Image (tube, rainbow, N blue to C red; front, side):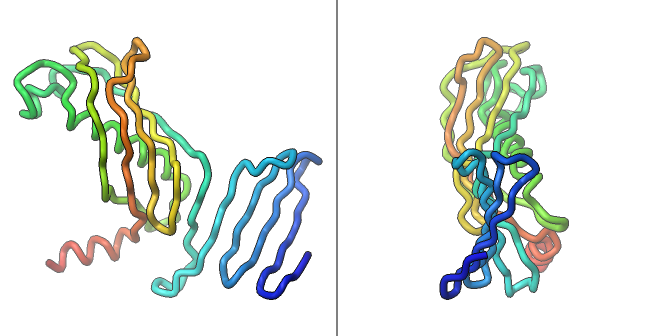
Length: 184
């Protein structure tokens, strides 16, 4: 352990010699670096939340997840009334991208936490007909406190990009959020 003013550093060797963990305590903030062969492969940061009296996690790591669907009569522009054609609807592409963001951040959430979408910037670049398989992938690009920013990409079964953009989500406590919504 090293100590510099308000900084405490703890180094822990992993199960093999090439993996090390470093825990840094700095002004009531814990940061865990997992280092493999001198490259930081993941960084976890725990911060105290006085508002709830608990420790919440703020993760900065390249996490990703994918969600898959097949275009059918239920998710076309004509079916969801976002257009007149039997092609994959833009709102359904966005929903698939949001599903991927939820899957990507799910392992990071504690009991009672969830995320809500707060900002979306997405383009739909190519039409996809009935029978086309669509895969949406979300990559966590940045975590700033409770704000999570994802890059999102949707591809068809020919590996052509049909849509892309960014989605922001915010970590909230389910009970507190719903109490606020229902009190209005």
